[in-house]
Image: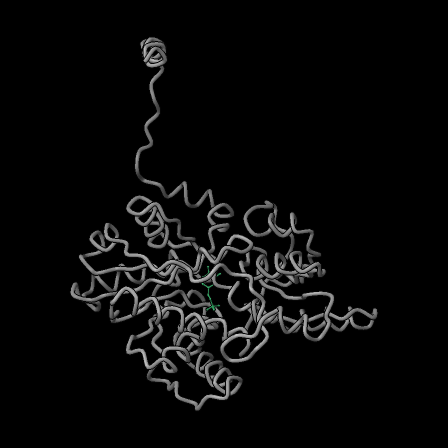
Length: 356
Ligand SMILES: *Cc1c(COP(=O)(O)O)cnc(C)c1O
């Protein structure tokens, strides 16, 4: 375990810095914006994603107090749960995942990965995610009564320590911007529980970086997000001993791209996944980053983001959800896949190419 720049205990789980790279073809396809990807899908632990950064601090805290079990929760397809269970396995701790609803009929994506990790899965039987923290708390109490030392991590890793992961990410981004000599007008990310957006906001203020932060919410309404992120930012500033500087005006949230609800893919989101795949060979996911990219596409189309702008898109990961939503993604595919016709001449071609 090492200490970080704020002297907080931190485990080195992520491979940092993650790349900050220009995506020229995609920027051109969206309407000639100067577009960059910050590749936090490549944090390099347990299939990557943004949750690894938070877990560097949360798991260090668990080790500090001698816990032997990491307990968290989320939906059966949660990236946060998969990453936490991978961290537990890596540290030789037990992992308990409290999942909303009942066992899905298909074991795919993150659920499949949790099985490989031999995490203990506890289904609440209740499809509502808002009560998950109380179910996680119940499980923690039950384990404690059995003499175990469980460490509770709330749904989404929500906590000021979790946010610190993105304060340090902001410091990392600033240093990359200096090296690359670019001045982005805005950074856009998907917002779920708001840990990422709150941490980045605190970090941008700390570094006095003049770059707007756009959060495209995938679940809560704009007002709910703003109140929640404001509170998280305040707690994070307190944890780091910083003056409270993030105000409501800094918290920009767009709630037009949720569609039917959390974890329900939208057509625009799937179209965005397809566009990024075919222009850059990079995979977004249907629950978070696809919807965030649908938001960016629309904001550029509406000229809310003009063609002269330099934009960073934070790729927060989530690729396992491609596989747990494979039917809806492939069903909405309107391009005609061509099948090579069976042709007797192909044998001849094959033979001749082998002769070369
Ligand atoms: C959790 C998650 C987000 C949202 O991050 P928050 O900090 O909860 O707002 C975005 N993208 C992916 C892929 C995620 O797993």
